Length: 258
Ligand SMILES: Nc1ncnc2c1ncn2[C@@H]1O[C@H](COP(=O)(O)O)[C@@H](OP(=O)(O)O)[C@H]1O
Ligand SMILES: [Mg+2]
Image (cartoon, rainbow, N blue to C red; front, side, top):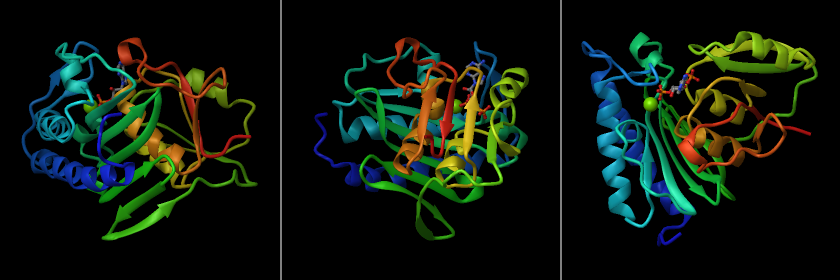
């Protein structure tokens, strides 16, 4: 990694940038949105584009040596060659939640090194929650003008709180996956917030048995790992990033796994 900045300095630089992208998204939240459907049939709006237009040039300016892979650029075929170290950006994750105006959408920036998400910032501007974390530095959330550190929790005696997608059902597969686990309750949430809820000890498990792309989850996964959690493939291996095509296999994100 050629950057002169440490992970702590990167976090310090990124947080105002991600907040700025969040402001641009919120400026469009109450407007009359035009929604276009992409090739994968997921929606995209002017808010996705506005946030990307802030994040991508800023990251490239700070360190030209680190390639940036961003969702909407990837959709138009702009995919840089990535080496050991690169950025993954989802300028608006949970676009469906943004369109239905339930607040559960996020701006996501992650730094990948050797297949591992080593730094991530996830901002939910409508909820006033910004999650961040980096390898070796731990994880934290900023809300209501205060910052507190985040840790995953031990599995409660009464059973697991399982969080799953609000908009992308994988119900049969999910029920099968959960059949032999001690589930106390199931909750739904949009976007990468699910990973952050596990990082914050507000949930214990997020199984995703449907399609996701690396930029959807890398920042939330970085926060989760920094808070003590793990994201595993169904074979039990740690999920890796920088895969051909940037799509993910099915996975389960755990607060604590034994
Ligand atoms: N069939 C599919 N192909 C590609 N991505 C999909 C998909 N179904 C869901 N997703 C991804 O899942 C994300 C939403 O996750 P969730 O269901 O957990 O809220 C979407 O992110 P975007 O909103 O950034 O497009 C979208 O990229
Ligand atoms: Mg997106």
